[in-house]
Length: 330
Image (cartoon, rainbow, N blue to C red; front, side, top):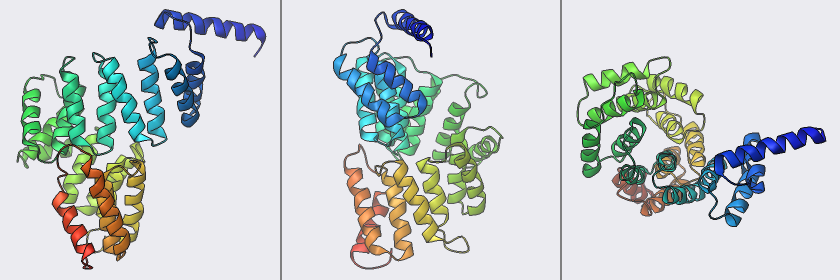
């Protein structure tokens, strides 16, 4: 790049920053943004942190926090990513983006009750919209039995009027809630129709795969899970469900492969997802490796202690730990 080109680029940068933020560029954040675009998230995080420590009242601070949290997510430093998103939501409590990102991160880790509380905090500050309502209903259903959250989800849904075609993910969340409430006929058919669309919502494909697994339709469930993996190859819930499909007794029983899939699921959560660790412990137990199974199951139980609410499968996890501790097969 010639000296003239560099000067023009610098002028454009200064003009954009002043126009957007009313201030001169922060050099470390400019450097961080370049590394971010290049995919060097670990190095970008260092520059974002440097700028945040020296510009604590800068108008672009929230934007830097959001970018930093994404970098940390990509390098699987989830606890730090969550911490900086919480900071952003406190600084910009009337801005929906920090809440949405925080809730999505918490759902990725399987921390559904935390995600519901995050969205609840958002709805106390900003008007409800289809995405926020979808996140809340999804978190309530995934919580697996919180009566107060489910009741609140029904109320919020009742106040959100939106055409299904305009918000397919909201419609999918509505269907999942209907199924949770016992509508296993029409609601299941609606979910199946949504999941089978060529470009149906990712969440519908995964939710329908879960239904199929519960019904014992393993091969069909795998078909949808592989579709989901093409969209999100490292999604922990998809990897976990696929792993569980190989723990079914019969011709599909392949516990060693289930261990591989469940391990990838745990890695995708930075070993913070108790659902994924529970699945991995089951796989180890089924393969006969009781020592590894007990170690991972105990780690899953410990991870659950720091979360709000009760893990829906806590009794199953406790039973697994007790059986492994006593030397019997789970």
